[in-house]
Length: 189
Image (cartoon, rainbow, N blue to C red; front, side, top):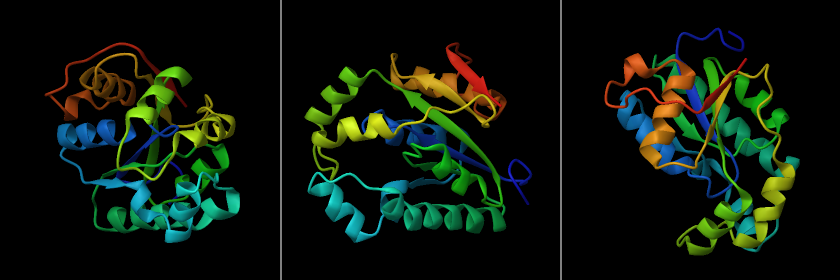
């Protein structure tokens, strides 16, 4: 199975820290009745320690983390389950790793103004990602390209509308009657 050929779907809610990945993923999971996984739980302790000290991860740090997420998608697909996962997936190369999973992997890129994200990070508690890493997140970010399967959604509206935009852009509104169609999503690939 290759990209887009799996019978099951894996939606990866992506973007820099504090764009609303967890909130969006949880609400998508509720709307669709699919299991949800928090991508941060796949990080090895060394990654969390590094980020907690304000040191950005590099490609070498992220590689085993991305492989664990890909393996999780494979396991869920083997059981016939669709899944929703949060993962920053900031670079196309990272998304390429995830796309190698044995499922139809699609991305929901959350688009937010840097100032909004900075404000959210400053008021967030209980997370290992310090506000000092905001610039590294945005510097690393490569937006979804037109040939990548997924949707870009701005987070300039309440979370329910973000979810509605994502569902519409992904063509999944028929699977989630609780979220009426909305506009504002850009569909890629």
